[in-house]
Image 1: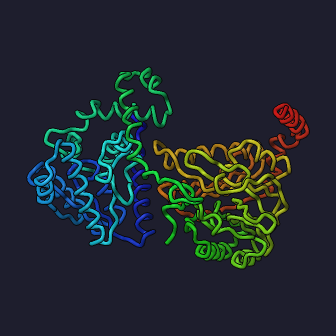
Image 2 (image 1 turned 30 degrees about the horizontal axis):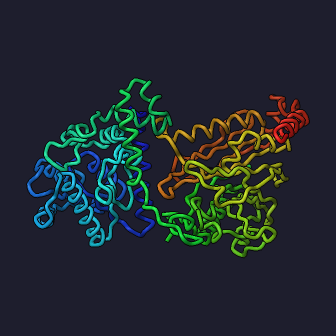
Image 3 (image 1 turned 180 degrees about the vertical axis):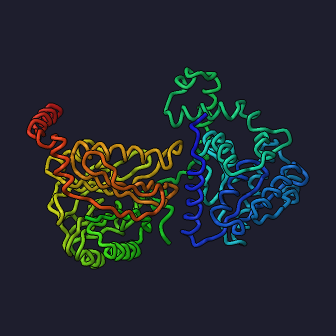
Length: 272
Length: 284
């Protein structure tokens, strides 16, 4: 696994990051989607500690009656943290859309649902005057295991430099209930889907491979030589390469002397 | 002598607000009878400037706002980090450190080594300084460095060879690595190198880093002072604002140089000849 994190120190850095980022835009509230899974449970706990629980809103956005246990776990965790929460069923708009434009795959349906949740979050961002916190971890970002402009969309992301296995360590420190920590990680796009089933590797092994390729700056051959299946390492390297577009802003065709995204460059955090 | 390390969180791109914050800290320092206050690299502007560089730059000799900070040093010395644009070099922007004492700017150091690559992009926006010079401060001979300058082997040697009693490095060092200790892993690297240089140079090594975060990067804090021969005098909090006040006894430099005779036995001319030969050879 990647190195074990100093969880209390990481908590301190991430909570001040959340406070700093919200403070810069004169905002005291944060909101996030609560899936009942580990990443959003951890993110909610960080936000509650950073801002005070009443400044945090968790939106639970099930598709109809799918995954009832996840909704229950999300509500229970929100109550434990003392954050505000609200459940919004996205089935009506999803069903209406696909009745008129039938989907050809479950991935297509899943992506649409992820973007619907994003759309609800951003609408609530305005209603609440709060910022949307992202919950994508480093493992997902690196292999592109997420829906662009869906669950990957956010105003700030406190989780994006923690591998999944490190999120698990942080979860223990933050006392996330076992019911959530023991669940098989899933994007929840369809019943029976699990991350590890889809990716074909356990998170322990995946994170180790990613750590070698990214932090270790090793070649796939070198990582494989350290004791991993060469085909698996190559597949991971391919996933990283193939998902670069999800980690960058879209390129702008350059025409002028000074162009947005090329040579008109300002910090995100300029004091306002 | 009492010194203070102002491990602050500058407001990015807001020079006026940062000048006010500096003035407040100077007042606080004066009340505690501090003789030298160090502020971090780009403490008057914030670090992640990108194209803001030209908007926040000023000439330390004539800028009316900066004059307030110069005037505030009657009775003490201060090191300020800012973006310099001087009338002689219009359109060139330097990552600079000014040593100000008794209402006068005694020295301006322009950062020589501009980290560019990875998360750093300083050479994209700053012009390069080209010199390391020591100068006489009210309390002794001082050499200034800015962040990466210190990590390049030769910089502190240049100050040492020129007789610095105190090597002051102001910094905006981002924290990286969360696997161990009570702070970022990179803080340990800085402290080890500071300790080592305090042995090599038998001088004081004063390191003032900043705190806070910009664009997702958290600055590691962990400012420190080492007395000659590796004695840790003070250390700032990891990754949060702090105001560290400690005492330096300049007699420790003399003590250190009696105990460890590196300075007495130093041969800058031998180093110079070797370097000259190496540089000439690389030019052929």
